[in-house]
Length: 204
Image (tube, rainbow, N blue to C red; front, side, top):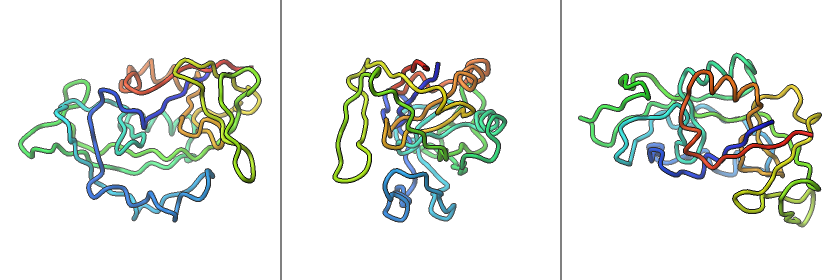
């Protein structure tokens, strides 16, 4: 089993945005759907909670980008050391007098980390998945999930040995977790994933 999440789909999580927007979203990086590396100088180091939320989950989107607490970063680094990019972001309240809290009610002190997943894999078994095919002028077509409850089946040999990845041309918006990574997340009782658009995928 593998699990997928769409962090651009915010439901009841805190509304958090980068101060000054996110300038790294430009043609310098977005050239097709290949893996790209961010220059740390292009990543804002501050974000503001624009909603009324006081408690910050362990997983939270910042300007629609998956970001994690330091403890989740440690779990990912333990499983795939040096593979993915993490950029520290200090989250502050909209009102300076307000105190933000972690899920255990500790005051939020250190930074969270914007996560740039560095592994892109197209592993969807199209014949057995509920997906739509979107042809392009040249190259491989885009593949998107059909509906909110469509079944997703992945080729196990393509994702073997990986714990965190994203789709390239297939299910581009999703971030995938292996069952091993998901078990560590559950064991650590990290929260925030339940607020995203998520689902499970079968493995061939």
